[in-house]
Length: 288
Image (cartoon, rainbow, N blue to C red; front, side):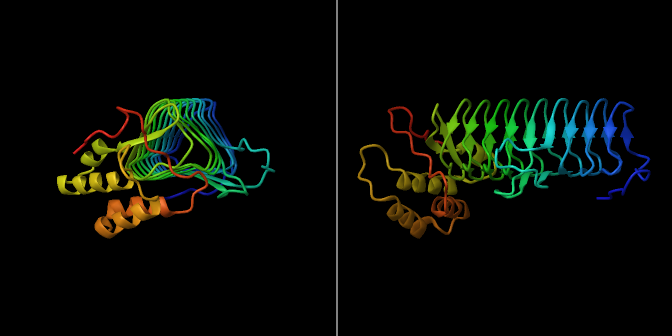
């Protein structure tokens, strides 16, 4: 990526509307389009091919990687909603080719956290969503309209958060997981898990997402058996979770996706793991 330096040395290919306010110290790449009424602060870096459609505010130590597209009334890199924040020069980063729709707010990190809020590459953040301080989103994450996140949320690659879901601070969402709409998530969601409900409950694995990502029938059957060992049906004799994890690791630990689930479950957590649904009709669909 070619980034031009300071004022008076912006690339001729950059298209900046006359009503936009761009600090001369901001670094602007090639073929950037900054539309009407946008505002760009002095410590902002904008990569090649970025498009700010109109009325977008980007401030703080914020980096927009190449190909990012931002729709009107978005604010990125403003101070976090954290009473402990004392103006530290923390960071915000949006990965390449990510699309951010109308009215999204993304706050920079805090010194008490990662000092960085990061959104990965090829993500889609839909309208009216909020990404709080120190959140870390992986690549190809989809955030549907009106999703809100507390600080320090971690969402791994290929996860999908459906409309109006609310994620508690410090929650972890594993790779390829799906969170249902209007769902309050207070605890961690395992990789490839599927959660539903007013207070999120694990209802199985994200079978549709796994099929779409090319997982074959044999591995799907192994994942289903592993899931049922980890989360036995209601009424079945249950051992402690650590014993069930060890059993699954011994039998299926050679499969990377199952090993990833087990590693996630054993990793340190501020929130604990989302509980499985226990009411009749709420348990997992057969899937495969």
